[in-house]
Image (cartoon, rainbow, N blue to C red; front, side):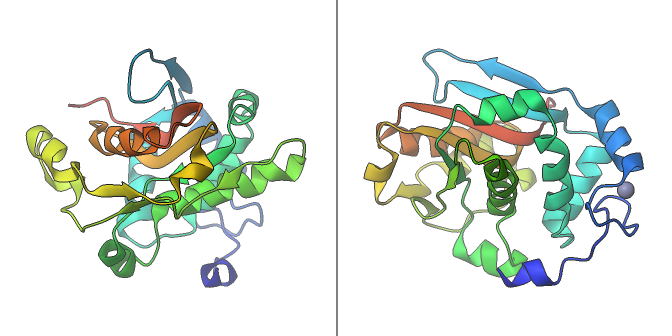
Length: 219
Ligand SMILES: [Zn+2]
């Protein structure tokens, strides 16, 4: 991807020169905010969910900059932090395929990138370095059929209707009997994730898990 060549060697959070893309000071800041949770569900759209932070303060600002102010390279700094967590590494080991929540072609054109796809690729790149087990990123199977209004601009009732029937699946057979991890930047009302999970479910995967950087508890 062309963007890889223009990322500056800085800590994404504070913009100070840093080859590792995450400085010690910001790493400590993230460590203070993190509250990694793995939740399990029965008879739900997905079987488990993991997230690293509550969606607030330092992390919330960073995610907003990542999504809406074109600070594309911030995903690298987040991923760098996440992959250092041993429980997270063990969690990833129980999956075969990562699917990023898709955005519409129009949104992609406007923003220039799919924020969830970059996170997915970043995680797979670092994780796959250990070679014992390989995670595949599958970004073509699940896709968004129409452009919708940004979920954050809508109220709770509108959000549900806004995402219904807007995702579709192709080549679903490659997901059959596989352990699928669905990735997004934040989990808010869960409407998007649930809708995507329902589509993936049609391909008869072995299990579906959900990973987001943050979870918003305000609703
Ligand atoms: Zn920093």
